Picture 1 (tube, helix red, strand yellow):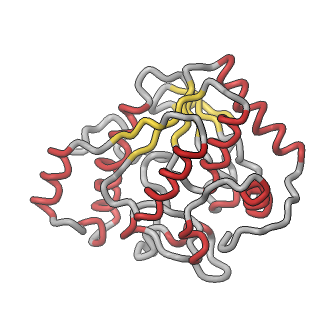
Picture 2 (cartoon, rainbow, N blue to C red):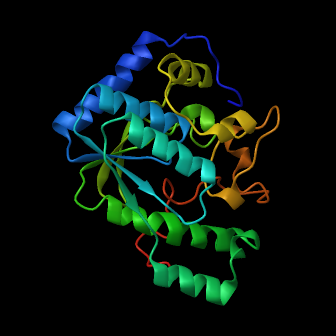
Amino acid sequence: MNSPSATFSIIEPHLQEALDLLTEAADSHGPAALATAFGAESVVLIHLIAEHNLDISLFSIDTGRLPEATYQVADEIQRRYPVTIDWYFPDADNIEQLTREQGPNSFLRSVENRRHCCHLRKVLPLQRALKGKKTWLSGQRRSHSAERASLQPVTWDENRQLTKVLPLLDWSDQQLWDYVRQHKIPYNKLYDQGYASIGCAPCSRPITAGEEPRAGRWWWELEGSKECGIHADYFAGGSGI
């Protein structure tokens, strides 16, 4: 997924399936919300939501460590589409305590430290963002990693007691980027530099040929899940402090 394609080859059944899932979430399982980090998947979903005037709210989590390119595409999306994006931030006291006790880059020292940082910066704000919602939508796709290959388009999130919907689950990289190009959707320019999965700036890097898309996340971790806790909450029910 290093370089977007200019050729439009979206398979109609996959597009219709995505629209059906979005419409069902909006009409029958609301209030529904899309979690967006402004990756290629979520900008496609924002485009579909806006184009079809679906009653799905949008929110993003600003961890405090995002790349500037992410803010740039967020601004482009906000100006392009008639949507409101609700921003959530980590608790300042939690981050001050973490930094005071462990330093600014404690996540580099162990998997446990990294998951703790993700929990404070992402998972706890997510809990606030999803309060009062019945359904949340995400851009996860099977092709992201072996761990995500067995995901289902609609599941019950036991930790959060919500329905979770993945409208683009079966889209290929080619289909995704063809759709972005065909509709001239703003996208994060880090993709043009070889990034395939973009999170916090210090925790994301470009991938090389043959690597899984999420190999660029927390690449110094040789073993373990390439998830931050949003989709696999390692501290379910805990405060993180």
